[in-house]
Amino acid sequence: MDEQLFLLFPELNEFQDQDLKTKTLQVWKEALVEGGWTINDLLEMPFTLLIEKTSINLIDHTRAVTRTALAIAQAMKEVYGDRITINQDILLAGALLHDVGKLFEFAKSGGEFKKSRSGELLRHPFSGAVFAARFGLPEEVLHIIACHSKEGDGRRSTIEAIIVNHADFVNFEPFK
Image 1 (tube, rainbow, N blue to C red):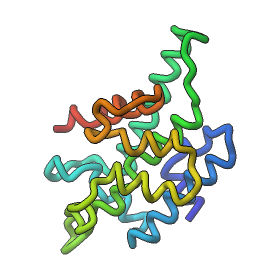
Image 2 (cartoon, rainbow, N blue to C red):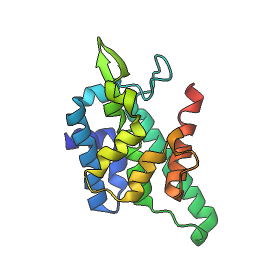
Image 3 (spheres, rainbow, N blue to C red):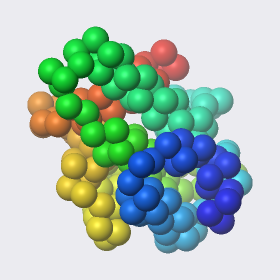
């Protein structure tokens, strides 16, 4: 399964911190198992249930958010230099994991994706952060997961969380 996830998320190869890379991969692997999903399910799973019959899957959305976040960070570093500090690996882990909670928020029934019982009670930013915490990820990564969506409005306190939040909305709004 590792090889398949590296193919789906080539951005995993951009980590400098190998421990954080391993933990990020482990979260995805275990979320698949615990959620009862396959790799093929990920390729079919819509990135949102808020847009009926969207052609954008969870993998493409996650990669686009990750690439957008990395590009924002790069632009900021180029312009602001040492006036801003962005932890690239924290940003990368948070972006790759920001929607992992959707593996618990969604269910598939009759070939259709819908909200699961868990998803009715707890949206993906919270279920994702709680799940990821089990793997010893830094609190800064958990903060990004928990605050990347509307639940984080007014609560984002790190530059990495701000970047992922905006990268996520940039990759959502055009498809509404």
